[in-house]
Structure formats: structure tokens, C-alpha cells
Length: 220
Length: 220
DNA sequence: TGGTCATCTCAGAGTCTTCTGAGAGCGCGA
DNA sequence: TCGCGCTCTCAGAAGACTCTGAGATGACCA
Image (spheres, rainbow over the protein chains, first blue to last red):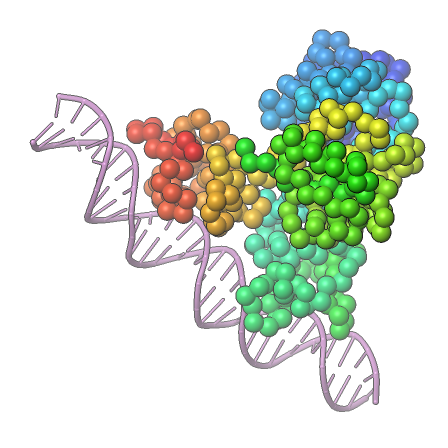
């Protein structure tokens, strides 16, 4: 698993260091910005999986930073941190475009759980499906990552891979896959053919045969 | 604005009625299920924009309901309600696949703000683009809504519509569209042809000609 | 009004995608 | 080990998609 790039915007040096270390330990590749201006610049010039932003920032206030990013089309999920716990404050943060909100002081485990939820949700909603070390992008119908060139898939190939990857431990019968993906086909032969196409493009390991039963995702 | 369909899964009749009314007033089209089993069934057979699920449910526990839905590929954002406020409880709910989490008793305004955040975030990330009264779904390459049958688009048609719809007030020159969408084409004639295809499928109004300049989205 | 240029419409060639069917290869039980 | 059925591989037909090019139609200006 490649570490997810995370941007931390926090002006309190002590807190920033503590959080940075903690998040690095949790497997994120952390960039830290000490004020909103730098945070804005980093967020606009690099790509992050998720951002953690303190509300009480010098130069640009946290919720304002979120708004500016959203205005410029940055869709990266953002978790706001705040010392204030009032209702109006929470509502404002969320309406500015933040995905989530955590009131200080907070438990480390909760921060990590919320970040996990944010990342997972964003990936699934953004139209990508995890594939071990690679990723299936449903929009562009391509498989990315794994240190290789992107692989283009046709509509049916993409659909088959999506169904298998959505429940990676489940074995699907040919009839099941046929009903889901090839509604107009005549026999189950199409399924075999498309498994063959996927293996030809992505390597033999992507799809596993369960003899006499059907297919499932390969162990990547 | 069409009301967003919302599924409320809540066993406490009094709370269910109160929330149902409140959410209806807030502009949602609310379906209510009184236990997890019915919630599961409704969530699997209908399409909701967002779901509100109580954790303390008879038959199927709330977090378990979320897990089952996620296993079956339902990506609808879910907000969990709970009486428990413990850390482990919150972490479990989020890791089950819920998008958000609210501890009872909660403020109505906060619930509504969190729902707004959930819906907004999901729509923008889910790969759909607004088209006036219709919606372009980038993943299935279809145009939905407008009281008509879904219209299937080819890859290029979808791409052209996406580019135009992303900046609906801007007029794009043929050269610009050519460079963005038809990188291998020879002359700008392809652009005209695809505008023609879109109009044939979606009606003359979808794309507007700006004589001597190019094309832009039609006023829907 | 007439000329000119832009735009629309559409047929057809080339390519990609989808599905069928058939032979080769393999796994598993007798 | 043998035989049977399951699986893999792949060629090719049918159809969808993409792009070209050309004639018909329409917009704009003198």
C-alpha cells in the first residue's frame, strides 16, 4: 500500500509536530503548512488524498481556506480541527465545504478513524476501486498504478473488473456474472472470454479461477 | 430542485415521526423503515441520495446494516445516529462504512448541516454533472432525468458534453474542443459532427451555436 | 437581394468492441 | 493413469464508435 499524501495545516508548532509524527506512523505521507497561505499554495500545487486543517490559523482562517479551495475546484476531503465546539461554528465549517469536523481536544483514535472513513469514502465516491497495488478508475476506464503504464479497458472489461473488485473475497458463478454484466448474451462463454481479456491486459493474477464454481479477484 | 430521496431507519416511533417531519420540511423526500431488515430491503431496491440510520435497531444492528450495504456495493452516503458516545463505538461505526456519525441528543441544525455536506460532497465526487433539469452520469455515460428515458452516450459524446457542462457559460472554440476531446483528428469537422450527435440524442437545445466563435451549453 | 462563409446533416470507411463457437489444455475423480 | 468435464485461448462475424468529406441549409453583410 502506497502511503496516502496528507496535508496538515496547523500553526501551533508543538501540535503540528505531534500530529505529523502520529499521522506518519499511521502510514500517511505528511506535508505540514504553518499558515493558511502556505496551506492554500500547497493544496493548489500538489495532490493530496486528504487534508487536516486547523480553524484558528493566522493569515487565512481555516473555514475560509476550505471555501477558497472549493471555489477553485479542489475536491480533496478536508477534516477541520477546532477549539470551538459551538453549533454555529460546526455548521459554518461544514457549509464552507469541509467533509468532517473534530473538536479539540480529541482522541487520536477518533481522528484516525475519521480520516480512514474520509479516504475510503472519497475513493469509492470518486469512481475508483482499489485493486491491491493498483486502482481502477471507472471514469476513464483505466487501471492505474502498480508502477506500470495505465491500461485502457473497454466498457465490458471495466464492468467485470468492477463487480469482482467490489467484493474481492466472494466467488462469482458464471451465471451470476452473466446476469450482471452480459444481459444480452447467449451462453456463459462470454464471461470466460472477458476474464481472458482482463488477464491478457492486466496479468494472469488479476482474476482467480475457482474450479467448478466461478471466478473471484486474484490475491494482489 | 427535485427533492432528494432520503431513507430514515429508526425504530423509535416518536423519534421517527419527528425526524421524518423535520426532514420533509427541509426538502427531502423521506421513506421511513422501522427496523434494519426493512431498511436493508428498501436500500437495496430503491435509490436514495442519503440515508440516516439509528444504531440501536431491532433485527439488524445499525453498523451491521451499513456493512451489509457496503458489501453489496451500495455507495449511498449514510449518517449514523447513536445514543452511545464512546470512542470505540464511533470508530466502529465509521469503519463499518458510515460517512458520518452523530451522537444523540443532537441539534437539528447540525443534523441538517451534516446532511447538506454529505449530499453536496457525494454529488460532486460521484461523477455526475448538472445539465439543467437533467444529469450527466459520467460512469454509466448516460443522461438521466428530465422526465424522459435515460439516453446512452458514446465515449466521445460524453466527453464533449462533460467539457461543455463543466463551464456552462463559456463559449468554446472548435479548436479548443478539438484539442481537448479529439486529439487525433484532422480537421475541426469532428466537433461539428459530435455536436450534431448530441443534438440528435438530447434535443437541439442542449448545445448552442455562437456564430463565428464556437459552441456553448444551451440554456436548459 | 445576392454573395459568401459558417454551420448542419449525413453517408460511408476504418477501427474498436462485443459476442459466438471451436479446438487445445488442464484438473479432478475413478 | 485415464477419461470426462471444465477452462483457456483465440479467430472471426456482427455491431457500435469514430472520423472524414461533401452537399444542403442557414447567417451575416454589402
